[in-house]
Amino acid sequence: MKKARLILSVIMALTGFSACGSTSAVVSETAASAETTVNETEAETTSETASSEESYFEWASKTISESEYAEKAVEPYGSFEYKSYFSNTAGRETGVNILLPPDYSEDKEYPVLYILHGFWDTEEWMARDIVGIPQMLTELYSEGEAEEMIVVLPYIFTSKEMPRCTGMDLENSLAYDNFINDLTTDLMPFIEENYSVKKGRENTAITGFSMGGRESLFIGFTRPDLFSYVGAVCPAPGLVEIPGSPMHPGQIEENELAVTEGSEPRLVYITYSDSDGVVADTPESYIKLLEANGVEHITKKLHGTGHDHTSVKPHLYDLFRVIFK
Image (cartoon, rainbow, N blue to C red):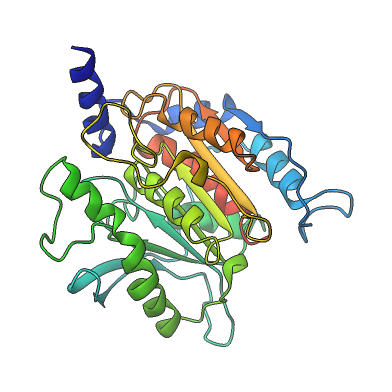
């Protein structure tokens, strides 16, 4: 029975679904009562936003801990553009949603944030009105609290055999793991060829929800040469081996959730909920590994949110305010 419950919890974690309710009031209350923790390693990089005595990490930690996301009625400056590119990795045309900053100009270069969806979902999940990324960025831009950026919402299921996810099993899970190849070989070159992108790891960020959160951690720690800002909200299990589970052998070893000198990310930020019955204690297990491996990081525990957009929104709000500073 214990083994059956473990397998069921893993399967649920991979779905990205939750029975938890979600309202704007819950989001506001949650942000105000969130707990933020910071590991104490000294950061060497100094932010342009921080004072001369304050590192970027210290400034970002304070900014995130003091943030209280509350949804506002803001008219968005724009909306996501739906595009497609040919993925050699998947062997097909693949959809992607792209949000450009206000007054986008080819004469100016912009940093890029990639946001990854969860299991079963598509490139449309994060573009929904209920997530409200354009509204959120409009508010932050108008208040001078976010840098202008290009936001990219890709389809992360990457398989030449299956165009869509067909079930909760190892084969489908590995197709999500394969997105790292599509991202680096196909999607990033497409974005850089068609938009005015400010290149370099210091100008590139990645985050994701549920399965997308697991993949963003995998990609961020596997390719630190490409990403300087790494986030995850309610990340799913499978990044490292799950003892006794046939669902996934683990993408990396526990000691590989680490950084080497000279390739440290500026930011590692994990958001999770104390009411998430889907991924359960998986985020906290990743946080313990980061601590054990000496990785500088920031975490925020949300109260009363679910395994859905109610956790995603405050995570993105925090991230938008501190990346590319």
